[in-house]
Length: 286
Image 1 (cartoon, one colour):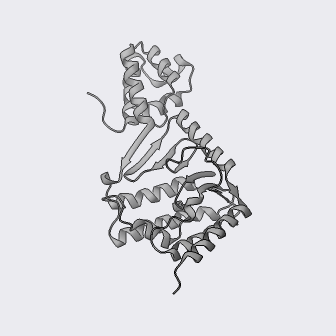
Image 2 (image 1 turned 90 degrees about the vertical axis):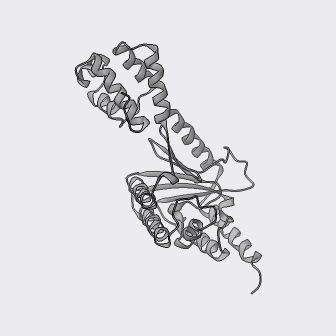
Image 3 (image 1 turned 90 degrees about the horizontal axis):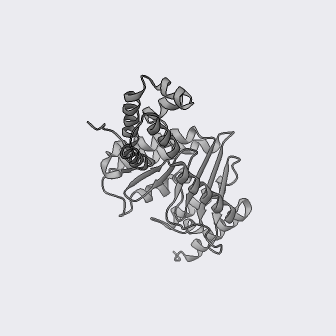
């Protein structure tokens, strides 16, 4: 009977099943492979994903065949890319997920994020977030009731507490387009730009803007949040978690390239203030 659960859980259960067929305990397998026992435990419980070399060593140790190796490889591929759709979640769960994201961010010493054409949630004003969450293109079954929207905004604002905490580094890159894309009123966007200027003065925040005049160093397909062990990518329909070490390295390189190509501090403030001045000029006379 095949194990149930997420791909990560199924992979761990299958590794445990194979190990039990050849070794009485995880400690025995660890001694055989020259690993720490904790590594075997983490792999079997799904808390850690194996590398391709780890799978090869495991398969050889339990004397499994190439069919089993292919099976494990398939499970590993699925486990490295996890996708959750908003339609599968109750609005209450979506608000809870926002709180969970905040708790995860609070545990990180360095937080890295990129958005090509939108202000990231951790920097948004309540008014900007409210207009964003009420546009026509909000996905079905996301949040619709006013109380759900306000609860989500409250969690988003609560996440911003870490911007003021010492011994913290929040690195964010936004495309210059994010300074002009709006979802409701120009007044709300202007308030958001004022907020960005204030944020650039915080010791813990490294906010950079990639100017339109600069050649993009990566394909601007979507924004992402980067941690040491996972990349989080939001789409219109859901959220993707990428945990493969090789894939994470690609995103880390992409983020480094974006930071190098962007402007910071006074130059970033100048871009933000110029965008605000143009928006005010473009507004019709009362």
